[in-house]
Structure formats: C-alpha cells, structure tokens
Image 1 (cartoon, rainbow, N blue to C red):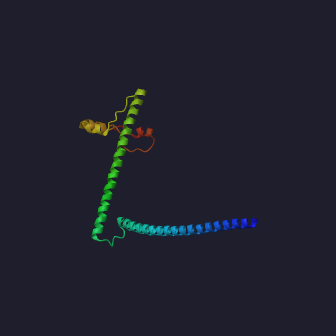
Image 2 (image 1 turned 60 degrees about the vertical axis):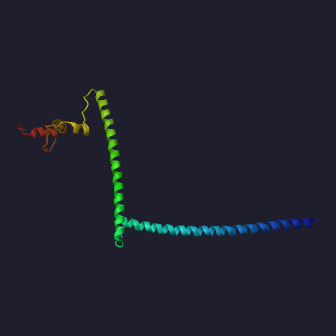
Image 3 (image 1 turned 180 degrees about the horizontal axis):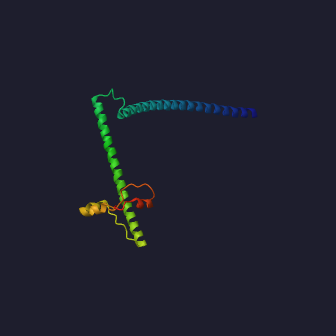
Length: 174
C-alpha cells in the first residue's frame, strides 16, 4: 500500500512536471515569435532611419554648395530661398545679442559711474565728468570740440630715450 501511494505521488508529480514543461515550451515559442517580430520591426525602423539620414546628408551638401550639378532651377531657387531665410534668422539673432550686450554695458557703465562718484566723494576729489554718447550728441558744437579734445598741449613728437632726457633735447623754441 505504501508503494501504491508513493507511485501515485510520483505519477502526480511527473504529470505536473510534464505540464510545466509543456507550458514553458509554449511560452518560449511565444517569446521567440514576439522577439522575432520585434527584431523585424527594429530592422524596418533602422532602414527607415538610414534613408532619412541619407536624405539629410544630401540636403546638407546642397546647402553647403556641394553636389549642385544635378539640381534643377527650381531646386536651386528653393535652396537660395532657404539660405536667405536662414541668414535673416541668423542676423536677427546676432542683432538681438548685440542689443543685449549694449544694454548690459550701459548698465555696467551706470554702476561704474556711480561707484566712481561715490569714491570721489569719499576721497574728497572732484569726480571726473564723463559724458555719455547721448550727452555728447546734445552738446553745442563748441562744447563738443572741447570735450572731444583731451588737452591742447599734448606732445606729439617721437623721442627715444628716458623721459628726463626729452626735456634736455627739446629746442627752446618749442
């Protein structure tokens, strides 16, 4: 009786093992089919991407002025229009960057002018009168000439040697 019971148990466990094996085989077949489908789909996407890359490279070469021999007049006109639009966009961006930099420099000028005035007041020295471009443009003509010339008695001749020897060499008439 014990043998019968053990045989029944073995028979049940063998049956379960066989069923588990069959389920595993079905799942692996299903997984193989799914993975094969995924591989085929990825191959299709890769081929599509390769074609797109080739088209983009041809377009890039044309925009760089290469391989234009096979282009028709219409294609050349389209390329020219595209380049003109691109140049316009680039110029607009460049001008915006310049305007932003000018604005930043004006802000920096204001801060430095205020700092200069503060330090001049602190040291008791008369602050430099620095005119902005707008202030210089609004001056009458005589004042513009005066503000633009730093000093009338500037030495403009070329001398070689130490500064003390220069005064010795100068003729008395100058």
